[in-house]
Length: 188
Image 1 (spheres, helix red, strand yellow):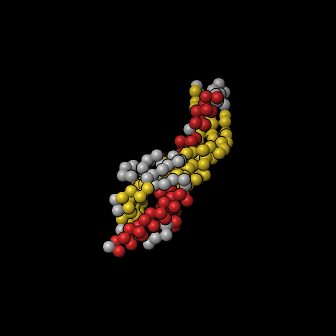
Image 2: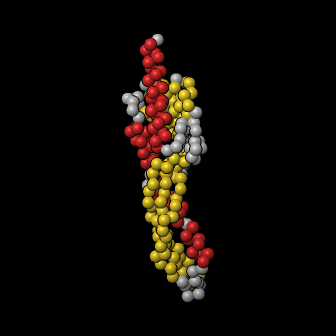
Image 3: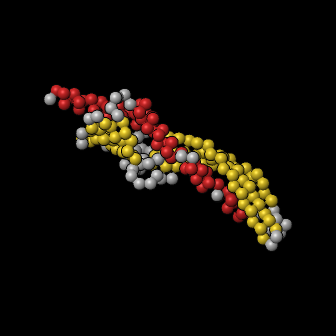
């Protein structure tokens, strides 16, 4: 009986350490379950947890020919892409003897913020000039391109691995930690 009480005490200490580790990462607290008993409920004062920021650069070209007159635009954009976790979905920690399992949603690209846009080239056609609508439309294409490029560069997978490293480094226990992401597709 004393050994069982000691095991529960150790799990509760690990639960406190895990809760503190999440609070160090950001202002969040997961739902922690120890041996099927809820130790603490999830609180989420923020809706997102950003674990990676990456500078992403994209270029885009537009060309249109009408009646033999060609107009063109070439743009270069620099964006700050943030990847992390949507905390409005359930974040839960299950602790059983011998294993800690963190259940959370897949990482996703949370924001794409424009840092700078340069017009590298803009050529009017003889009777087919570049209009303000042309320019606005082409500028609007840059953020989705930055999002696609970040996703193609595995920013989402890197965000999940980064969170695993952060949690593992902040835990003060020999109990194995496993991150269990939602079944289903990775969000973008």
